[in-house]
Length: 456
Ligand code: FAD
Image (cartoon, rainbow, N blue to C red):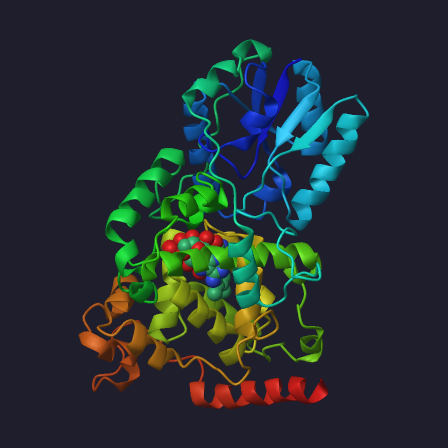
């Protein structure tokens, strides 16, 4: 009987275990469902990138990808019926929405005598597999990373072009409509798709990896891999990256594996505690006042638009708007500014990031935010409040990052760009004065955090 291969966060043909599970030689239908529940909260940049990935996948499949729009619990069984398929093959989804959606699809398929077959996941080690000696789950990163590395992962699946012949256009009765073009975006976005992911990765291996351990904290330099957008949509599987680094004991490779481990850790944490996508991981924080005061909405808008008057914060927020991506160090600085200088709830910022980031990933984003807010796993000590000026001077020492994204400050030379209010002539035309006094807000934040600590 024919089978359906339902693509989700695995928009590639190389290292594609669902092909192996479906069985070579079966007649197969390749499907993607545009799910309004996932599209609605996505900003235009992410939609543009997703549609580009779909077009690239369609091309790899010889124009045989069927794209339909609707609720998967209805659409998938309808397509399976039309194709006369008894099996729908997917990579397992461990997110709170994805796993409940899959249970619904599974039930709807079962009612028609068909099955949902899960093979693999978007992770090197699927959430729930890494366990401590007594079978428990990890709540802290470092022991997780050790156990994760000891657990190990499979070699990449060899699914090259030979597998594609059995994706049979005759299985689709009607020629599917072309993949939608997606919104027009002015943002400066990376090239979507599997081939672009491979090129980017090769380039990083050749030119980035050796300097990664030192360079990854510098937003003014192209020191990181920029693989997050490709990992988000599975244009490449992390197992492929790890296989390319196997046996490489260099500092760069070790450090890169460690960052991939964070991605896997946060997916595991979200699987343990699906509520942590919306709520404090540490409930002691539920009592903390985070109303931001009278001016909350005004301050929030200044933060979103990059008009806080703190150059490194504004540069980051504008990079997010311009490129759908922000450097990790600056994600930490801008997040800290929202929760500790503006006293706004982390989930306000997390929602904005999720909408705007092309790599927006619920597990990494919500837990990255909670880490900064101190309410998550591996909480940073509560008294650590990032000083945006010192962070800027340290990680963007010549000011090049700020000048790239804040044109009003383009004429201010060197590191002076981090304190434009100190320039003898004042901040250049149009650049705002700081919206808050950092030293004062720092003291306020410490009081709020002390209160949480005392209530424990
Ligand atoms: P590299 O430095 O090259 O890292 C390689 C890969 O390791 C990344 O592609 C990513 O998959 C993983 N990685 C690196 N750092 C982290 C981390 N701290 N947590 C989890 N995985 C990591 N990452 C996302 O993929 N999606 C998000 O929505 C997201 N939101 C974040 C929000 C906040 C507040 C913070 C502090 C971090 C967030 N991160 C998120 C993590 C990190 O900032 C990005 O993964 C990284 O900047 C992506 O760029 P890169 O691929 O060049 O990173």
